[in-house]
Image (tube, rainbow, N blue to C red; front, side):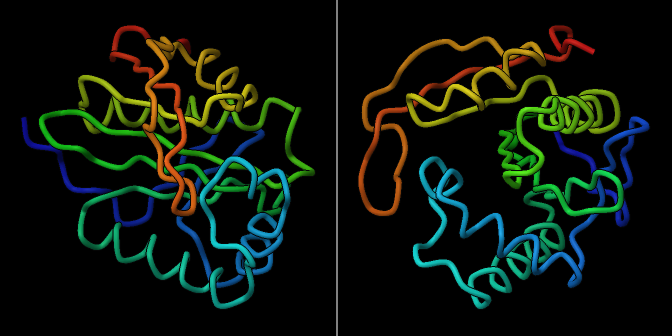
Length: 182
């Protein structure tokens, strides 16, 4: 199954959350999120995280989009950068999602809304058959967000994830097109 080309300027919204391409103006928000201890605990961002790492991230998401490898979108709430959500295309009609939020946006349902918007696009527009999700064991917030969208957590895999050079155990799950909780 061939994955369709990524949209040039996607804008997915539900009335509270907007997903759009990252902009240079998101740099400060990306920097704030990358420096957050909660982000650093669960996401393999470089530590220390400075302005160059934030610029590198923005350049990488643009390059992945241009190459058709991934759709990485800024999460915006009330006009403010709230985090990122991405869909990495794996081929054969499958993808993998990842997401993270700024501390101020957590615990408000923003992550679930953002993930649901992206998964809706993945199934309805891109025609994917399924999407994988992975997280470090213990990342309960990510697990709750994934499960709220219909992701079935299928197990724990020893050494699944590389977290800054250390192999860590991870949870893995998936959601099929007909299982998305809308």
